[in-house]
Length: 568
Image (tube, rainbow, N blue to C red; front, side, top):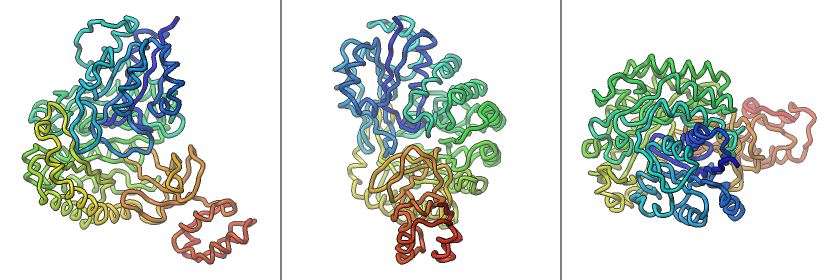
C-alpha cells in the first residue's frame, strides 16, 4: 500500500513570499517534491484551508486514514485577501488535535516567527501550538520532509540538522511542480511564486529593525539554470502566471558584492540571462512579474538599475510592480530602525523606475511602477512621522510620478528582531494618529494616484472574474498587486473578460465589461457608463432587443458612443 500524505495549505505571507490564492508559494511545491523524490509512488493530496473549511467533517474523517498530514502556516505581513483566508490559530489547534492517527507536521514561517494575527500586535510564539505536532520545520523544511519520507514518516525520529541547499531545492522544485494541478485556481489565475534566493543583502548591517529576512543570514542564490528549469516544469504542468517574488531584492540576484557592501552592485547579466531563459522555456506565459526591490539598490546603482528595468520590460508582461520597502519618510525613524533609504533617496528611486517603466502596455497598465510600503509603530515614531509620510507621497504625486499602490501597515514584532523588545507599545500609543493619517493618505494621495495610473475609460485586458459580493462581482488581472475591479452587477465567475474603468475608489476601481452585449447587459451596467443619461438608459431597456449595434449608438451621446464597444 502506497504512502498517503495530505498537504493542507493554510497560506503564508512573508516579506518575500506570498501564498494566498491565487498565489501558490514554495512550501507546498517543495514539500510535495521532497516526498516524491524520496518515494515516487507516494499519494499526495493537496487541500487549501478554504477547501477544508467547506466540508470539515468529511475531510477530517478521510484525513484520519492518511499516514501523514502536513499543515502550512505563517502570516508575517497580514493583509486583506480576496482569494482566501489564512488559517487561524484556533483552527490549527483544533484540527491537529482531532487528527489522532496520522503523523502531523507543521511547516512554514509560523514555526520560527510565531503566529502572526494582525498588524499592530506581537506574534504568538510557536510554543502555543508545539504540543499538537510531531514535527515542526521551517528553514530547511524540504530536506527534513525528505528524510521523514525516506523513513515512511515514523514518529520520534532524530533528524540531522541541515542548512538549505540550492542544489537539493533544484531537485524538489521540479519534482513538486505537478502538485499545481490540484490547486483550486489551476487552469484559471493560479500564480506561482518563484524563489531566486533567500537571506537579505543588508544582513551585514543588521537589516531593518522589524524584518525577519536578515535572520536568514547571508544570501544564498539559486543558479539561473535551476530557476529556469523550475519555471519550465511549472509551465509544462499548465501554469501560465509566474512571479519572481520570493527574494528581498530581485535587483541584487547573483550580485558578486553580497557580503561586502550594504548595497551590492546588481549583476545585470545574470538577471538578463534569467529573464531570457524563462521566456525561452515558457514562451506563452500570460503573466511574468516581479515583486521586491530595495529602493537603496536603485538609488545607489542608477545605471545598472535602469538596465535591469529595460531587461524586465523587454521580457515581462505590463502591470508589473517593483515593491519598495521605504517604510518611513521620517529621517529620525529611518536612522533608529536602520531602514534602507532616507526620503530624498526614496524619491529619486521612484523617479528612476518611472523614467523607464511608466510607458503603458497592451493590457492597459504602465509596464513597471514602484509600489510603496509604509510601516507604522517603529522606534522613534511621532505625529511628525505621519505628517512626513503624507508630505512625501504628495511630493510624488505633485511631480507627476506614478506608484502602483501605497501599502500602509502596522508593525508586527517577531522574536529575534530589534522590534521584539518594543512590541506593539508605539502603535497602541499612536492608534488614533494611524487611523487619521491612513484616511488622509487614501483621500489625498491614493485616489488621485489611482486616477493617474488607470484613468476613466482605460481598458484593462484579461481580467479574471473571481468572486461575488457587495451587490456585484469582483475581478482582477493576474499579477503583482492587481487592481481590484468592482463590477456593479452580477457576473458569472471563473471567466476572463476585458473591463473598462468607469469610476474610482481609494484603492479599487468600478468597471464594466467590454464589449457590452446590448441585448443582455443588466441595467446596472448601463447606469455606470459615464455620461449616459438616465433617459437614454430607459430607452435602451425599452427598445431591446436590437438587431444591430449601430441602432443603439444612435441613441447614445456621440462622445460616449465613440468610447464604447458593443455587440448583440
